Image (cartoon, rainbow, N blue to C red; front, top):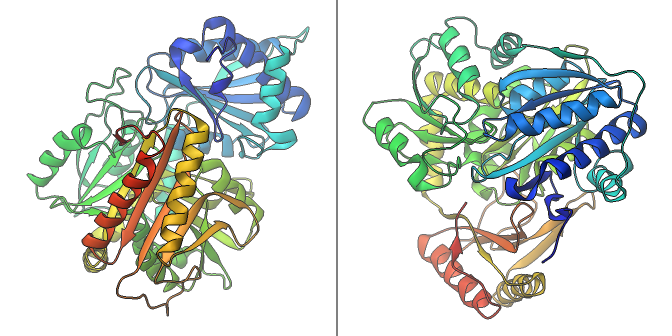
Length: 503
């Protein structure tokens, strides 16, 4: 399809595109539109900027900085390959500024993109943020509008990594030497998170074995995505050979955190969150609070979360959408996404409430909890073993119409087999997905019991890859989950589905 302006780069959650489709001219056009949005629509005096480990990051970031300064905006530059968590923390420390990081998370090495924040660390996405967020930037981009100023904006460096490490350690309750006795393996997949992790775990006195720690935008292992077994296989083999308590695997921009027991047993994110929630509750002990769990979360893990004295409600996928929901509901202290992302409503240095990610804090908290309460994780691994899970996979379709028809066919199939469907959160927000459950209710608390043949299917349109729909299945037995996956494959094959997609 002809797309001379590369409008397909405007995704639901952020900007994402093959770098070959974003020429220097188009990148400058985009940066000018962002500059106008930041200055004229948001009233921001400046922008915090960074790039992740990708090779194209410096050149695209230079284009952005030039456009922002030409609009009279002050620019704070975070030097070197930067994780998104470090970037978010720097935005929290400069709350009157907008922020933008050039990167593409777990995507292939040839991709690029941006994650954008309004002042106050407010996520900017499709329909989210002032004046429609990313929709407004797209409008300005289409019109070719920008901003200029007779006074060129200033440019200065801020190196906050030490402050970020210190604050994250304090949040996790880990002082210098506070992780002595913790034996931890970490694989950064040549992404951007190695520096802060090695600094913090080193100060904490952990016995840390880091692997693939130097940022390398060629990503020699393959796409920096811990879901892909060939990418993490070298790390898994090294971890299992080393008698570690816990293994941690990160993606390209360091916001995804996959957790393994040292013997190679994977623990899904919803169970990991259940394990650390009692520790979080010691710090945030107010009554009447709750958390969100994304629609793919294991129902048995949700029951365990509720035992921390919290209400647990389903939330849709998407980083920006989750943060927006946390921002709008002051009774929610955090959220987990089964893609291995963790969120919290943090208190900034200015006393403000900022709903964002800090993967370093969660990594420290998990390591501390695992050292102090290994039996808690063993118990949750045992509960997880009573269920079966087919981690999210997908199929690509020739057209959006065929994809929509396939999703509808799957929904009708499982409803015909006795499942009920849910497509909206309690607050009325569209899940932009369908959750199908049989043998368990949609409202789950610590007293919920499940039928012997319970099953849960979640399905959604991917917002970061063209033509892709995704499914995940969890259920009481491997036979039930395997049968559900086969039934989904049979349904979608009628609508031109391609080969199974992992990533």
